[in-house]
Length: 209
Image (cartoon, rainbow, N blue to C red; front, side):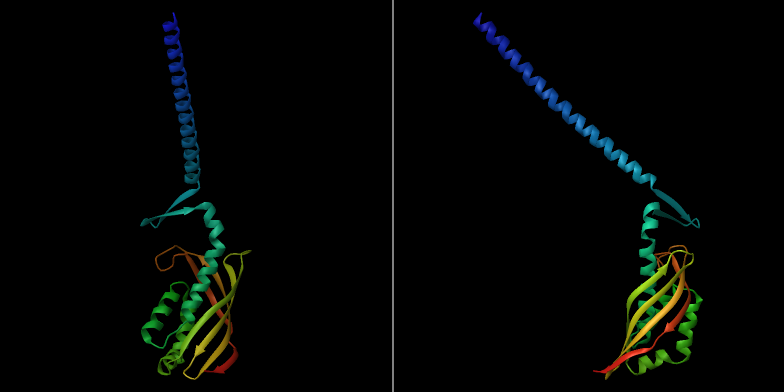
């Protein structure tokens, strides 16, 4: 009799162990299933936020609807800043000037080229090269009006002209409008600067080196 009781006790303990294992397995399966469903829903939601744009039948561009709106002010400001840095930063050699100017002109319309052509005809770049003058520019701020399109922008910058014996510091204030175009390798933001005008380029100070 005692042997039978011990046998039933062992069987009962075994069933308890099996129930515990089954409960653990069930709980684990539930957690895994719930996690998989949550991740799948999040992935599906992200996919719904995406749009695919066919660029003239040549390339497939992926854009995020929400990110495009959120990033627009950042992209416009960066585009304007980059243009000014390229267009007004000049080293005293032909290759460097051509590289910067060509890169800048990919970001702007013909008005920027007209400014470049005027400076070239006046011998500005030749004087930089012949006198070993370096010119650099720091953009201080960019004010952009998003209430109308194309966007109106005003840029405030400081220009440094370094000669062998002096440094001239000049203020630079420009205005322009910015509109959307197709993105490309040479214009990753897909923006175009138009109606560029130099409003102020006066000398702030000059100091000897």
